Length: 212
Image 1 (cartoon, one colour):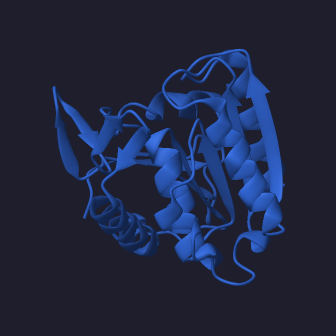
Image 2 (spheres, rainbow, N blue to C red; image 1 turned 180 degrees about the vertical axis):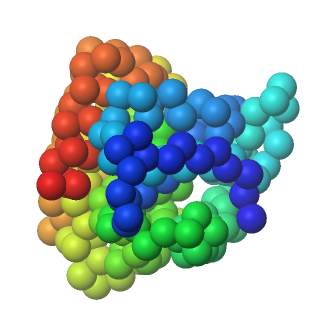
């Protein structure tokens, strides 16, 4: 199992919607929990810690190498982490003592890459997916199940000034998802590799819309 932080709903209800967030490379489970203050108060929010020690108190879902041709991911680690996240998602309702009305998965950067991988493997598990400043991995999108992505609404955003994972990654995710018939809400912002006030506001609105 993975280390996690849990924030119970500010507006409690019997079967709250569940939002699970995956951090980026070199961060930990505390990194994205701060977003929860700005999101729908009905949400039960869980942030997960990646399994690999990245040093300096940070963690990774998979190791990466920066090469002349671009960023190369450790495919074995990525697939193993995807399976870990799937295991956690399936066990969370029982652990938390709830039957979530919805299950939304999201992540930033490497966490977005992982979220896309989880969705491509078992889309029926999810009610929505949030991909912030990510990119597609061929290992995760090369063998999408028929009628997979088109059952899940996606929220994708990226900074046009991102020098870590260029905006081309977000545009490629959008192209792939729309090619599979997915419902995609896509935004670009004049920001770097980050989540700014405007992007967080739009994300919050999208989540509330999904909750109805």
